[in-house]
Length: 312
Image 1 (cartoon, helix red, strand yellow):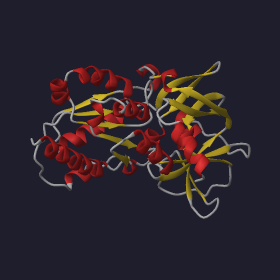
Image 2 (spheres, one colour):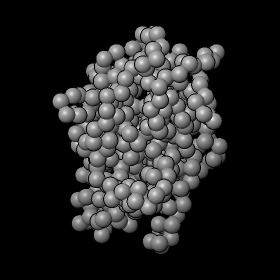
Image 3 (tube, rainbow, N blue to C red):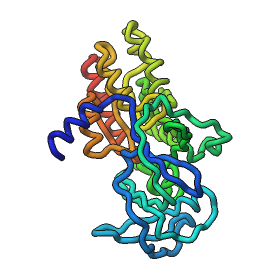
């Protein structure tokens, strides 16, 4: 990475903005966070693979790596469309995986604030486990932002949070330290809470986005006793409507009272560039989903350090 590129990344940290790539499927407009996109490619011939999820089109090898291709039109609509040379592959990189998604066309990129992304109600999102993570206003268009982690988790459950990682830790003592978690995906929120509970963390409070968590802790800055009773550690996703995890981290670490609260960024977007942002903002640790066992180990370490510092 060139120094000027690195500087640009640092300057953009914590602005609560995102770039959204708009694409079409059967003339409907969808979006993906540009931070997840590695490249856009013309579609190529795909080799089918047996015994896979119906939405898995197959594999192809553009250069040195073999990539799985997901037929996104089929996944979203259940309708098969003949592969067209005008189709595109959006090659993504999240959760330490590279996956290509077939789309019909790419429209462009818009820079918007997370405050312009609204959480869809259940009639739109498909219930608690729907794949519409947000509705974005991009110029005159409403864009459905898809939950690509949810899509991949459904196609390949082994790529999501695994409770076995917690079970392999054996019997653990319970901890009543208050842990706050900001996670907008209802599915992942349930999984994280269940995993932390199984790991012995009995005092976990979940928030649907960074704004809700910030609204909860900001008043505590003027009441140190209440702060100590209500929050010992914060875990935050990055991608969230209204307020993202980077903005939340910046607000916490810029506050003279709240800055001592350990903050763990737990996100599918923890890449080298994102680590630079998170470090610049003051995050204590940054972990990639779905490494839930590693998350618990880091929580143990940070809270033990906090206990020693306070003499408790």
